[in-house]
Each structure stands twice: as C-alpha cells, then as structure tokens.
Amino acid sequence: MVAISGSSALSLPSPKYRPDVDGLRAVAVMLVLNFHAFPDAAPGGFVGVDVFFVISGFLITGIIARELELGRFSLIEFYNRRIRRIFPALIVVLCATLVLGWLWMLPSAFAQLGSDTFASAAFLANIALLLQSGYFDVESAKKPLLHLWSLGIEEQFYLFWPLLLVIAVRLRMSILAGIALLGIASFALNVMLIDSNPVAAFYLPFTRMFELLAGAALACGWNKVGHGVKASDWRAWTGVALIAASVVMLDSHRAFPGWWAALPVAGSALLLSAPAAWVNRAVLASRPLVWIGLISYPLYLWHWPLLVFGGIIKFAPLTLPERELILLASVVLAWATYRFVETPIRFGVPSRRKMFGLGAGMAMIAVAGFAVVWGRGFDYRLPPEIRAMANVTTESSKWRFHECMLDLSRETTFPDSCVERDRRPLVLVWGDSTAGALLPGLRKAQEARNFGIAQLTSSSCIPALNADIPGNPNCRAMNDKVFSLVRQIEPDIVVLHGTWEKHLDNVAETVVALKKTNARVIILGGVPMWRRGLPSEVLRYFMLHRTLIPERSPSASPPTAYDAVMRARLEPLGAEFISASDVFCNAQGCLTRIGDAAGDITVIDQVHLTEMASVFLIESIIDRLLGSGASASRPR
Image (tube, rainbow, N blue to C red; front, side):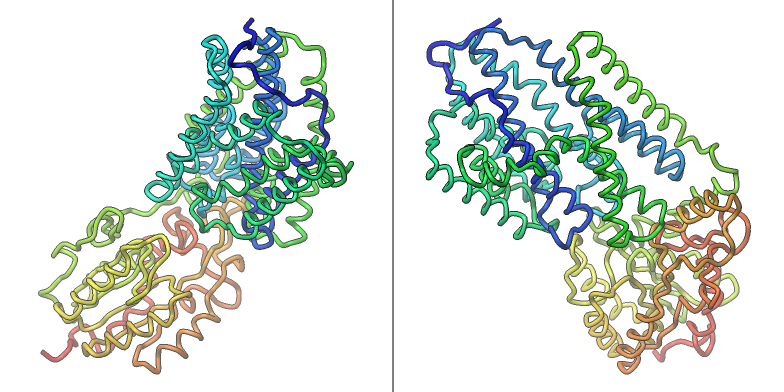
C-alpha cells in the first residue's frame, strides 16, 4: 500500500456520486449511435468516443488517486473492478456476434469476424483494425466489432496507468506535472502523425491517451478549478458549445483526431469541471439522461453489431424506420444486459472467484475466435456448391494485376507488354478495376478474331482527364500519362469503362480529347450493382430458401437511368455507347450465374465480373465493339 504525501499530494473531487456524469455518458453514447445510424444528421457524432475517454480518465484516475492518498490502493483489486465492469457485457455481446456470424456470414467474412473476436477479447481491436483498414472506409462498415477499437485503447491505457501513478507517488513526483507532460507529448504525436499516417493516429493508444489524461488532469487538479455557480455556468456552456461545434463541423472526411480533437476533449473537461452549473444540474442530471448513462456501456456494445447484421440479413441499405427499430432493440438489450448480467456481477459480493471466472470466460471467447479463423470460417456449414459460389475470387493473373492493372500506391508505369503494337485494329481498354475485369473476355475473343489489346487500367482510377479522385491522388497524373500513350500508340478503338457517376463532365472532356486523335471512342456502361456483393446474395438466398439462387434476381441495381444520362451527354460528342446492363438484365432481373458451377457466378463482389461473365459480356458485344470487322483499322 502506498500513500500520497509531500509534493505529490493532490486535490481530488468528492467521491460522492454525480448523476451529471452519467448524463454526460448518455450524451456521448447518443452521439455515437446517431453517427452510426443517421450519419447525415450527426456527421461528427463519432466524437462521442472522445467524450467517453475524458469521462473515463476523470473517474478512474480520481478513484486510483483517492486510494493512493488513503494508502489502500491495490493493483489486484483495481483490475478486479475493471474485469467486473468490462467483461460481463462484453462476453455476452461477443458470444451473440459469433452466433449471428455463424448464421449469416460467408466463410471468409466469418473467419475475419473470428479474428476480430480474438483481438477484441484480448483488447487489441484497435491494433487489429490498424493493420486492416481505417475507421471510416467501406469495408470497415461491414465489421460487426469495429466499435471495440475504443475499448482496446482504454484497457491498454489502464494496463500501465495505475503503475505509473504508483511509481510517481513512491518517487514523490508531481502527478499533475507528469500528467501534463505525458498529455502534451501524446497530443503532439497525434498532430505529427495525422497527415502522414492518419489511421495510426486514430488507433494507436499513444496518440489517443491525451484524451484520457485530460480527464485525469481534471481529477488531480480539482481544487485549482473555481466551483462557484457563475464560473461553473460559464465553463459548462462553453463545454456544450465546443462539443456541439465538433459534432457540426466534423465529418468522416476530416483527418481526426489531430487538432480537431481539442474541441470535444476540452468541452468534456469543462462540463465535468462544473457540477454546480445549471446545465449539469437540470439537464445532465435529469432522470432520462441518467438512465441512458447507466446503460451506456452495454448500449455502445450492442448497437453496432445489430446495425451491421441488420444490413447483412436484409441485404440492402436499412431504411430510416428499420434503423430506428434497431436502436430501440439496442436499448432493450442494453437494459437487459445491465439489469441481469452487469449489475449482479459488478455490484454483487466482490470475490476473486468472479474475477477468475470472467477471465476464463473471456479466454474461451478468444479461443472460439481463433477456432473460427483456424476453421476458415467453418465453410462446412454450407453445401459445396453454395460454398464454392460464396467464395469465388478473381484470378489476378487474368486481369494482369501489378502489370497492366496498376495499384497507384505501388506502381505508376505500364510496361511495354501492356500494348500489342503489332496487331490491328488495336483496342485500348482505359479505366479502373472494372475495366480490368473485361480482359478475360477480350482475350477469349482474340482466339476467333484478329485484333490487338492495349490494357492501361488502374485500380480506383476512372478514365477522366483533369479529375481529382478522392483517396487516389496519383490518378490525375496517371490519366495524363495514359492520354500521352494514346497519342503515341494511336489505337483504333478506345473503350472507356469505370464507375464515374460524379465525374461525367471530366469523362466528356476525355471523349472530346480522344476524338481529336481519330480513334473510335466507345463508352461501355456500368454492369449491375449488387449492393452487398453477389456472393453474399447467394448465401442469403440459401439461408432463406435452402436452395441455389435462381439464374436471375431482382436484387441487383441495373444502371438503366444512368445509362440514359451517359447516352444523352456523350453520344453528341461523338462517342458510341454500349450498355452492359442490357446484356445482363431483363424484366425478370439480372443474371446471377451463367451455369451451375461456382465459376459461373457473374460477379465476385459488388461490380467486378468473373472470368465467365467477362467472356459472356464480350461475346455479346464484340461485333459492335469492333465495328466493321476485325480486319478494319484506322488509316495510317
């Protein structure tokens, strides 16, 4: 046992329960829920996690420092309390998520969920996500345990924080000065990384701990804050304004945390510092907010998996009423978890038996997650034909990945082998990865017809001159390079294909430039969009009907309306338009497969054609593509 004395003595807040803190928890969790369910209404609602961090640092540091001051702090008892607080609800949610994954996920996705479950049970979710992707990208939105990154950061912080406080007390160091030094260093590291590595700045505990330390500093310097009603009101209203400003001004496109994190962190600290303020007494301490605050932890755990699985099961974007119902279900489950799981374990008679039992339960969850990974998502759950279709992948060699299908973060030059200069007519394929998926069909067509292929395609880079593509800063320069090659190799036919809905004017500019080279310009319209992936639709149909998906399904979104827009915009400029949607879709729906084998499925994900579908499409349009015949070529 260690007691605080001398220079390390602190001024601490009263241990008396503060209902306004639970009210602030309610605000934090409602911000996060609204961001996830209604992102347009609360674009910066993700700052609710930052509010949680400040609250946690304030409360936990206050408890540790108070026990140190009384000379009765015990690391074992501290971790016993943390386990009884964190583990019960988390074990329930992780178990439920694994069960839902077993029922509704493809083997590959279920294997990824197993990996995420293992990481979450080990409180390493933030590190696992750092190695996978960012918080705001599309793939992350499909991860049922994405939100547990914050729990990882918090528990990693509390692994070392009590030890640092004990060491500071024994060395008679100024705890407040130490907190300030660590907090400034953490914030500075966050600002340094936000431009060069924003994903690391978001997920690393070292770049987020300044938020917990802001609460810790408030707890340890409590008496340095004026607690009069007038001063408290001023701080509270300023805190409300800062949090509100961060919710309104921030969105998923801003680099965060960075400097922006100062807004919700400062706002939360100001509100916590003002228990006497009217906002705290009348609003935050109100019964409805306090009740939500009490169930905020299980509510945070439940809401995101339910939203993700709601989308997986429906296989379409959730409507507003559906998202509202899911949030209502989250509240009901959170209350039940708080009432029947968390409260009896957390507030019952404390014992080491509970601690070890909960630890064993969490270890079993980790083992279960590892078993799902080891079992490759337990693909035996599905019949062989469903399993094969659900796991169909592209053969990267057929698209010539990293050769003529470039990843612009790694490659920026096309080798000479991408252009068959000695064959005419020469067909240039220019576009993004959806254009790369046309190559198997074009290669097959070459077996019966005499023409050459020039493949100049780049991942996520549409064929649109002077267009700045978000997330792909090298695309504009690459398109300039491709156009220079066009003038050099003089293709007879240029096929433009890509997902360019937001850049049609730039595509029109590209058509005008290409027509000046005397090439035929063909616009190949988009293929049907399977919103959550055709392999997932195969699985969903089997789960509902216990049979193979029919050859045509109305679940796809054919780009018929946009086809008309492209025709009207680009044909007057001299381009020829060919609809891929007309090949795959009719009044009964869009083709899901061209046969019964796994490789006969038409799409490997949302929009990328399989080899069989690529051959089917090109066979259907090759006469129109080559025009007057394979022997025709531009005048030399």
